[in-house]
Image (cartoon, rainbow, N blue to C red; front, side, top):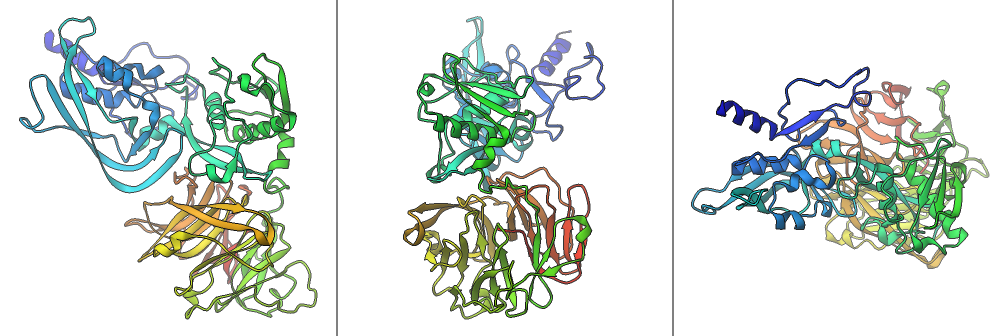
Length: 619
């Protein structure tokens, strides 16, 4: 009888899993009122909508039960992490701040008691924690991947007074800061969302990806919409902050007590702010509303077509509709223009494939010197309004810019950049256009490595400050975001070519402009090598590369380094992959086996042109 009772208590002291009817299981008619409680180990891969409900420690629980129970309780989302705190001493429960950050491991941490006689006494135990760290999330919700490395931490337990003040129970009195989660628990509890801020001194927005809780936040008790608005008002992530501005003045926050924000039946969301917003001007308020509309547009579960910002007393500050936010995009067309693709044909001429399924296999060479054979091209970038192109010659030595909409005289323009590298591999990278007509290219000459910027695509190039180039790194390829604030970089160091995101900071305008690309962050540290990258949305990249010990693959990666769930079918012998900022446009790739091919969502790769290289979308 006693053994049976103890077994039941141990089983209940684990974690119960519940699938909510009508929300998580289609066709579920009623909640079962009987049946056994399942014992679940944290970080078991499965449905991200599974809810984990931790339970408090049983009476007279052994130290290992307390440690494992606490680790499992951290994976739940009960208010205030109240259950997890029952495993802590009163002092530790007061001091523990799970919101300070999250360490993400490949799987749930493994706990081991320290050897007896070394760190153990009658009323004290120490357990070491082990795992493989893959990422961290800081207090501002920013995700940062790391190259998989060993994680080690420790939990100390002491004998503390029991809940009734009598007797002694094992409780944790020293523990790692923040949360410690396996990847599957992190994915189950968190969701990615883009916040939006303005490029410094500009009127267009820049995406800033963060992670919020899938459901109610245990600490703030806020629903996902309120969490997202709060994160936006708190300001940009530390990495992006030097290059962007927020229209929300310092101190502006949600009104005290607001934990839930829900659109009305007209899809209008009212956002009550504190007194710091009471005297904000109309123009500033409109920019604030634009930031909110862009940010809330990334919450797929919530449709917001109008935002009303309110003073603390409930009065209206300003109102903005969905269509009005388009004025604040880097691309004034709203990214809805037809996504034409380009490539270099077998003769080295620049060719164009019009958007639309009916145009498969029907390319046309562009007007002007890049289409008439005046120069053989190896690499190309077409500007975002599709009026000019920048072409690198087939020896990679010269960069030229010319019209692709008019034949004109058809004469070959002089180079705007020349490289003195001894070999083609040591000369010019592929160029890239930002959203305002600026052209970028890297000269890979080992004797004089340079990152260059041409403000309008034809002016004298400006040498961009990039101090990290002197640290033994070399730019193999670059792609600038539409907003001009972020640069995807393939950097070679030794035998590895890895993917980084650099921050573009500018001062001044025109010929007097100074530009630097700083703080490159590795965003695919688990990939052994990356050979091609392209922007595929506001904060998403499509990447061609290999995982350590794996085969070549095409995959999506967010600009913060987190991986996208979207799957991409395999393709043999891929050389280059390209995507459009219009996420409805197909991927395009060059394959040694199949020529130029494209891929629509939910379909397989489709041949387009039998022979061709270097496919690109504008940018």
